[in-house]
Image (tube, rainbow, N blue to C red; front, top):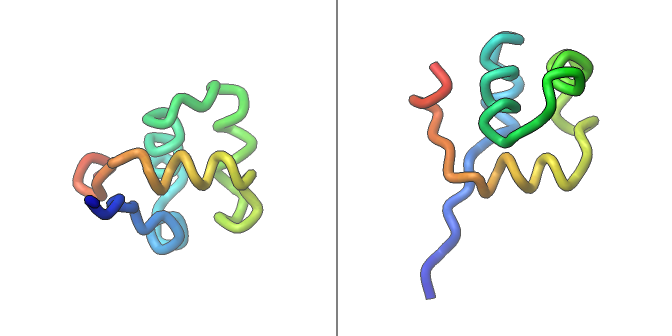
Length: 65
């Protein structure tokens, strides 16, 4: 069985600027009005379902730079 690859979102979120966080949230289909509220939160404060979507989305760090 293949291992599911996950994105290290916690470290990315800690080191990213707001526009990079916004780009990540857009890639996982978060509405624009929610992006504004979420970019300034800590990663652990995000809803669990959203964190799961981010980590299993297959996004790479290079796509967000």
